[in-house]
Length: 240
Ligand SMILES: *[C@@H]1O[C@H](CO)[C@@H](O)[C@H](O)[C@H]1NC(C)=O
Ligand SMILES: *[C@@H]1O[C@H](CO)[C@@H](O)[C@H](O)[C@H]1NC(C)=O
Ligand SMILES: *[C@@H]1O[C@H](CO)[C@@H](O)[C@H](O)[C@H]1NC(C)=O
Ligand SMILES: *[C@@H]1O[C@H](CO)[C@@H](O)[C@H](O)[C@H]1NC(C)=O
Ligand SMILES: *[C@@H]1O[C@H](CO)[C@@H](O)[C@H](O)[C@H]1NC(C)=O
Image (tube, rainbow, N blue to C red):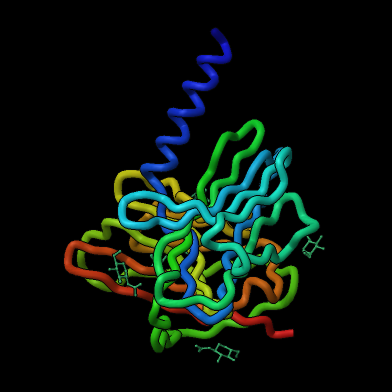
């Protein structure tokens, strides 16, 4: 009885997560494509499953199971290489010899005990991000605690905001807020030391604890307002 309730709760949780997800990372297609999937939380990982969205269904690429080991689907044999074989929390892979058929949405399912299954969503796109220019530039020292402020300038009600980080050709979603829930939702990236205050959607503050060079990049805050979108971009670098 109890098990059924737990299972039902997990199922319910999974549905909330599944219906509510945002793209965690966007990368541009290249000949050898690295797709990152690392579990940054505590817990026991039971299985990783990689899938690609094909039309309205999912095509399995490969899985890494604690019990059954690695399995690569026939279609992808010879093209998938795991980037961190020795790690039990890293299922990042390299897809080699890619073609336009590899453009699209990928899911990395991480099944853990006792948090159930979470899904990382990666969008592989054909075009690069274009020229993104920063409106300001800030440098910080290692281990500093830093804050970045983003203001909207359009005189319109802000409906939602997303904060993303672009570095090394990879766009990671950091956080997302909207006018219904002022509690940020965070992407599934290595950002446990980053927090967003979006109690006012027109003036949000991003806090980064213990800044290191892996936090360098362009931070892009996108305001979606009733009168259109606007983005503010800050170039953050390590001044040491
Ligand atoms: C968020 O910022 C507001 C002011 O804009 C402040 O009153 C509030 O305490 C902050 N919340 C947190 C959790 O820091
Ligand atoms: C934005 O919020 C920060 C911190 O909450 C505050 O210090 C700052 O004055 C605010 N800026 C504007 C333009 O409201
Ligand atoms: C800051 O990060 C470094 C490197 O990741 C780590 O060695 C150090 O313990 C961290 N310091 C704090 C105060 O969290
Ligand atoms: C901002 O968000 C909107 C809606 O999600 C999107 O259409 C637009 O391309 C985004 N703009 C930037 C600069 O990311
Ligand atoms: C950001 O700053 C770094 C360090 O100063 C610089 O090398 C880089 O070109 C800048 N990027 C952009 C897009 O402005």
